Image (tube, rainbow, N blue to C red; front, side, top):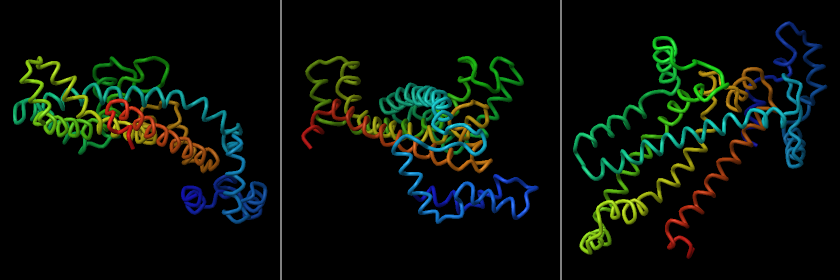
Length: 285
C-alpha cells in the first residue's frame, strides 16, 4: 500500500502517459480513462482485488498484460540472482573460514581488504570498471545483452561482490566463536582429523546465521538487480522495472514490487527450514 501511494504521489501519471505535447483536456481525458480521477485508496483496492486473481492489469507503455511481461523477464533476473549468490557464497565462505583459522595473517588481511572494498565500492561504478577492462580494453566479454553465458559473467561478479562482505565477516566471526567451543576441543582430543573438525563440527554450526543472511541477501539481490541489469542491459525483471519507472508504467512497477517482496518472504522461509535441518535444536520451537 505504501509503495502504491508513493507511486501516485511521485507525479501525475496522466500527464506522463499523455506526453509532453498534450494539453489540459487531453490529460484530463487520460485521467478519466485510466481511473486516476478516483481516490488512490479506491484504485489500490481494485488493483489488490484483481492481483489476488492473478490479474495485474495492462502495461501503459508496452500495451501487454503485466503478468506476461513479468513472466518473460523474471527468468533472467532469477538466473542472475542464483549466479550472484552462488559466487558470493563460494568466495566469501572459504575466505571467512581461512581468515578465522589464521587470524591476523595475510589471508585474514586480504579478506578484510576485500570486505572493506565491497562495502565502499558502488555497484554501478564497479560494473563500469569491469566493462572498461574486460569489454573495451581486453575485449573478452560482451558489455551488454543476455544471449549467452558470457553476458552473465560480469553482472554475476558485480551482484555477488555486493553480498560478499557481510557473508565473509559473519563466517569469520562464527568460526572464531565455534573453534573455541568445548565440543570442538573434545573432537580434537578424541583424535578427529582437522578437516573433519572444521567442516563437520565447526562449520556446520557457524554456517547457520550465514544461511539466514544469504536468504536476505538473495532478496536484496533481486531488488538490487535493477542497477546491475541497467548497466549491462540485461533484459530481466530489474531492467523492466527501470524502464517502467522511467515511463511511469505504474501497473508494471507495482506488480514487480509485489513479486520481489514475495520472493524475499519465500527465501526467508526456506532459510528457516534449512537452519532447522542443520541444527536439530531449532526444531523444538
